[in-house]
Length: 278
Image (cartoon, rainbow, N blue to C red; front, side, top):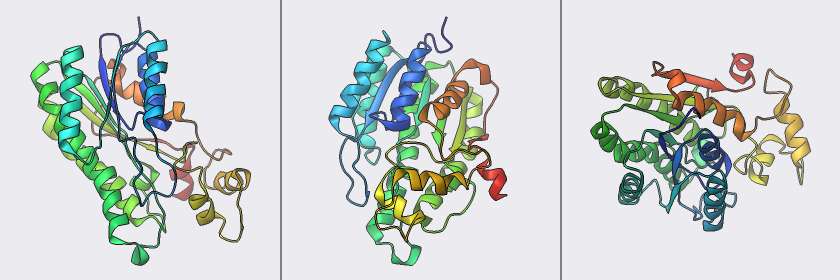
């Protein structure tokens, strides 16, 4: 028996990175998956975003685990896209029990030099996209009448301020406020909602030259190794970053019945980052 047997999980940003990891970890424990990703580039994002081929690879890996998957190229900035994906998932599986509102982007800039569009893209994806995802999936969850679990990917930047990332920090703080409100609104329906707060995670979102230069401005061509050395100083545990599966294991616990009475919490998976910065 898997910890997610009989459950269906919708995961946004599922084409790669943390989203793919969450989909696979939940599928390993028995969940069927509804996988959503925009699979297009957003102009203000300084690294290559996921592609349709990446989403196809997620599907292949879920199916290799002998689980079913509905995959849709959908933009969390578009409610129609999300509602269509939810309808297709419910049509295929009959219900959705778990939501991983994971889709997110990252870009650095000084607050007063930030173009309006860079700010707006961040808020639209990382904050409003979470709201749109939840808005699309909560009605069928309530109608199903079996409760459920919603997990929002926030960040250590959802609990502390960081220079150079005002739009990201604002969005990640914003989803905490959204979660705390929904914990009260959804409790009568036995739907739980929590946020996870990773430190740096070893994905393309941090492994790119734009972020390397923020932390190593004096290096002409900073390397992954140099970036890792700089980042190790930020965590209490002597590691530069965590792996996607480390977050997925926390997501799995929050999705499973093992946390059946846990709602409204902010769960760090941060190698002691928040304790160190105090």
